[in-house]
Length: 475
Image 1 (tube, rainbow, N blue to C red):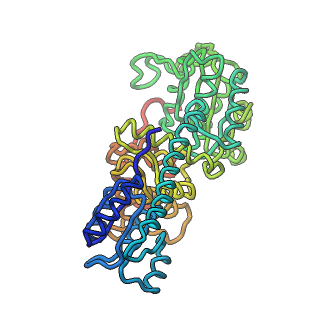
Image 2 (cartoon, rainbow, N blue to C red; image 1 turned 90 degrees about the vertical axis):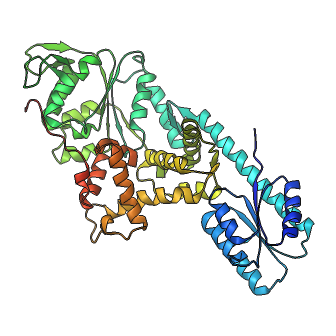
Image 3 (spheres, rainbow, N blue to C red; image 1 turned 180 degrees about the vertical axis):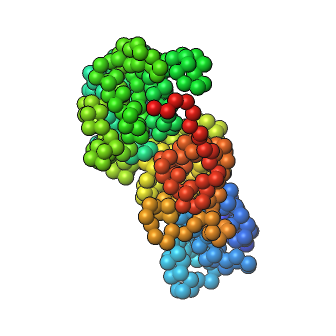
């Protein structure tokens, strides 16, 4: 494994001290960034990830404690050693309170300094080995595009392997972003129809009046604009698999016709009296509680039981947090390759942020956060600062737009430069990038379409999305 030398930031206005410490640090295997003052050090930290900092306490303009505070704020995992020729108990106590690794007096005890640097170097190299190992484990753990070392995901992978050769109908449930389409593709890929068609329809993205045409096809002249006959999804997938994503969005009238196809194996094009035999396996996915939808009268009981021959319930990311380091390693590796950037992993503090985040958008949100951080990163390691804004965007927008929340503050009225204003800027930027397409914007932000639209309505941003005018037959 190729390892990089850890980076030491050296800050002292005395050139003799800088030369002495630099020699010791380079001998201990560090790359040294030497700065003659605190202001220069603050600028250097903006562009480089630093593993250790050795900082003089008393310097003109920006002193050592101010540098220490900046490091704790920007690079919490960085070890800091303060040094001074004028030691006092108060300064030592303050340094420890601010999180300094140690406090050295001048003239420096080079043996003690060397020991501190050895400990810090070993920890930095251990961290790099751990990141490489997590990347290797992620490759070993990958199952049809999904990654999971946790017991709950290993059992899920085992269940998919056992079911794939036999089932004709499967219902996959789980929150948005948990990987339902990947699970559907795995069932198809490991089943007997892996070489046949895998046809997908997102039921939440189809104009209601066109559902029948999309699923079952139509004949020429069946409705205004039907200038030629068209095969529906079930015909095109004959012999293969149909994946009905967000099946809970199907209108009741279409649910009845879908049930007939599943029971008889016969589909009928809009405008035709002739039935057509099809042989398809059906996988449906939903982020709704379909049992509750049945009770509410929005989903047919008979269709629910026809689809739910076997149910796979994908766990939310909060229930499998031990998988986050491996998912992150895989996403960083993929982003670095696609973006052609030298991003090797995360600092320890950054990884801890990911482990403790709420992840309401689950694996999709994690992937989006990591990708945004990689795009913006100027260092080899993603830091807490790289990840913080993206993580807070997801959590605070969700809180502000929660249904029924009283007194939610409009993001548009937030002070310029605040996190809330940055959140609005992010939403607007994404909508403009995808030309107002709600589905694409929701995917980019790691949200469901419904969740995104609730946010747009609450914060008066609906004018930025395209409206889709119904067309075709009305049934």
